[in-house]
Length: 88
Image (tube, rainbow, N blue to C red; front, top):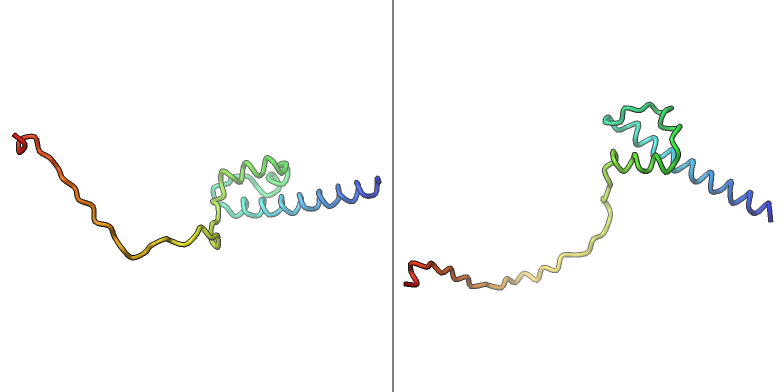
């Protein structure tokens, strides 16, 4: 049982370190971030995630938001503007 927990902990730590390294890489490349790479590596993963949310623009490329439902037909809408002077 202890071996399973240790293995899971090691796998989780490795995944966290990979995620942390990816965020640090993006932050170092951002010219608005004044921290050095060494300073960023000292942050915890949750701290880096909050920091990254402030400075890294989300990349929505490749995401599918659904096709436009354009039928090519337009419905004409009548609009009547009433002027009080004309109504009298």
